[in-house]
Structures are given as C-alpha cells and as structure tokens.
Length: 364
Ligand SMILES: NC(=O)c1ccc[n+]([C@@H]2O[C@H](COP(=O)([O-])OP(=O)(O)OC[C@H]3O[C@@H](n4cnc5c(N)ncnc54)[C@H](O)[C@@H]3O)[C@@H](O)[C@H]2O)c1
Image (cartoon, rainbow, N blue to C red; front, side):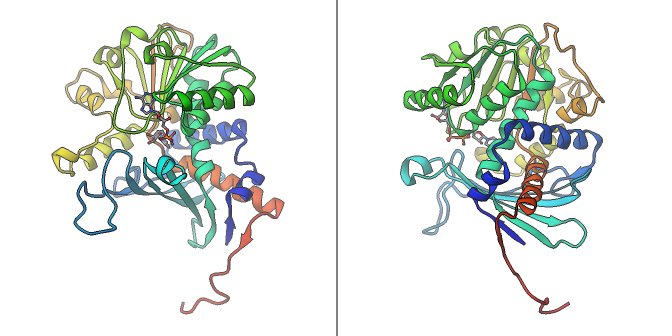
C-alpha cells in the first residue's frame, strides 16, 4: 500500500479547491441516488466516537469536554470510486495553545471494496479541511442566490478559511468578505491570508451581528463552549446560512427557511445515538429541528438533502426571497471521494512511499 505524507498530498493536488468542489458534487450526487454506505446497522451513522469521561478515574485517560474526542468514520462510496475508507482522528481544543498543533489530527485509510486490501494510508488534515470547505462551497453552488455579493464569516480558524475559499470559488458574483472572531489576532491573520490568496476585499468586524446582518451568505465554524445565536431578523431575505459547525437559530427561521442537511437520515441516527448518553452529557446536533419535526411543526418531506439537489431529485427557487439553511456534520463519502482522487493522482505521479505488509500472507 502507499503511505502519503502531507507533502505528498499537497503534491498530489489536495489543495485544489475547484476540483475538490467538483469531487463533492460527484459524491453528493451519488449519495442523492443512494450509492454509498456509512457506519452501523442503519448504514447512515456518522461514525463511532470515544466519549472521554469528564473526570477520568485513571491517569492518562483522555478527559471529556467541548471538542475533545476521538472518532472513526467508516464508509463506502460507489459510482466510479467503488472504494471503502475510514477516517480516524482525535480533537483537542487546547492543541494550538498548549502544543502548537492543529485542534484535530487526522489520518485516512482506503481499502479495495472487494478484497479489503489496503490501498493507502494518508495524512488527512488538509484533505479533511478541504472537503469540509468544499461541501460548504457546494451548498453555495446549489443554494445561494446568483446575485450574492457579500459573505459574513464567523470564526477565523482553519475550517472557516477553507469554507471562505470554497464559497468565493463557488460564487463568482461575490465582492466582499467580513469576518468576526472572539480572538482579534485570529481575525487579523484570516484577513491577511485570505486577501493574499483570494482576489476579493476581506476585512474584520468587531461585533458578531455585523458579520451576519444583511449578508447574502453567512458561514460559521466556531469551536469551544459558546454557541452564538443567529437572530432571524439579522438574516437577509434570500440569504444562505451555511454551517459546518454549531449554531443556535430561532424557531421562526426554521419554519420559514429551506432546510437542506448533508444527510437527514444521518442526523436522525445522531439523535438515536445521542439519546443513549447520560442526560448531562447529551450533545445531539440540531435537536431543536428534530423537536419541530417530531411535533409536526416542520414536515420531514420538506427537508431535502444536498445530494437530492445535486442529483436533480429536489430543487429550490434559487433566486427567490426564501432564506436557506444548510447544515453539515460531515460524511465519510466526502473524505473517500477526495482521498481516492489523491490516491489516483499519487499513483500517476509516482508520489508517496510503498509500505509492505507481507510478501505472502502468514495464513490464508
Ligand atoms: N462539518 C464538518 O464536516 C466539520 C469538519 C471539521 C470541523 N468541523 C467543525 O468546525 C469547527 C471549527 O474547526 P477549526 O478546526 O477551524 O477550529 P479551531 O478551534 O482551530 O478554530 C475555531 C475558531 O473559532 C473561534 N471562536 C470560538 N468561539 C467563537 C465565537 N463564539 N464567535 C466567534 N469566533 C469564535 C476561535 O477563536 C477560533 O479562532 C469545529 O467545531 C469542528 O467541529 C466540522
């Protein structure tokens, strides 16, 4: 099998955002048609997570807290990919401050879907950030008004940088980006990096609502323990709120907006799995939306996955006044699509190291 370091991944083209958005389009079109598998008996679990206890009883055991976790995401993607993959990562929100490391550290394995033979192990930090941003870019391709000119960004971390790059690539009509972060230094770095990289005006604002009010597109990728509220009155008619991270929104917004998740069945499985946790440790993404669906306030048939839009099975009035809400918690099919593309590029360009597990299997 191949081992691909971060350097190899970059040489293979992992940072090419336009191609990554197209790969996500292909993957979500397959998902819309149902040609993929995820974890667990319902085949749509996001993955399996280690939930570290808040007060570990043993020295060295990981300690629970916001954005503290280990997680494995297995799956299969069909179409021209026809490959299985597993992304394995750990997240420690104190990593940048205490260890000079990224918050999350990720690797990915790809396996032949028939024989299970491992094809590659790859460094996955850049890949994962790229695919997260690219899906947000894909949401802009299908959900944002074609005359969108302004983008408001909440949080200036790596995920927001990838999302901003992708939205700017997906929406050629954009003219201005504003960013808000509770950490001014992070916001300044964001402006410097994004203005140098993208041919667009990028500036920082000092108040959260200034990055939300009257923006055509708003995205947010915060981490940590404070989740801001996006007031419905701040969100402009016809605007898109596209979220790879946590956020609070108002009931009125959910009643009025087009609701487009990455995968509603996965969101339902999150809820089933979340209810197994002790009450004080429950973290069920989008529980407010689930409650409104359960009470009949929102019809489940009105919720359409992004894949359904990509596959042409569902559509929205793209240039109409109704607000749009995209929620993404991440799916392994995204990593498989971009990971397989990188593996193929690496083979073609002769990149990476060959790892040998055996000459002959010890037993058959
Ligand atoms: N949907 C997906 O597929 C996916 C994939 C990867 C990461 N994520 C999520 O994206 C989020 C961000 O990831 P990251 O690696 O960029 O994290 P990070 O910790 O490196 O950066 C987060 C930034 O958010 C800022 N922030 C925190 N609270 C804020 C607030 N209330 N208002 C404004 N700014 C605030 C911090 O100062 C920091 O600059 C995480 O929560 C992660 O779970 C989602």
